[in-house]
Length: 116
Image 1 (tube, rainbow, N blue to C red):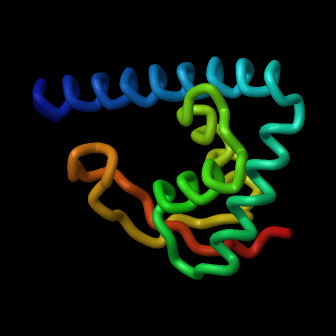
Image 2 (image 1 turned 135 degrees about the vertical axis):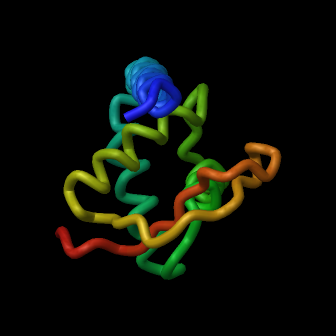
């Protein structure tokens, strides 16, 4: 493996760790404001994806916010998606350009998983 590959892998790991840490801090604060935030968000997002079929995470998150599930920082939804994936309630079926990321790559498309 060359140096460039090692540098990219280390940077990618660091970026994922920083994003995960920020999401955890946000969900802790969201739970301080609404102790049932995680459950409400998870229930809503899974139901929304079930209703809509394949949908981007940005669309599901926006729908949750419009439905009144509003954390102080929308990064609090990240751990909700992580939990849904771990429990196989959702699965990633594709990638899409992000709307809020100025069209950058990295938006995930979700579908219902096989979990209950």
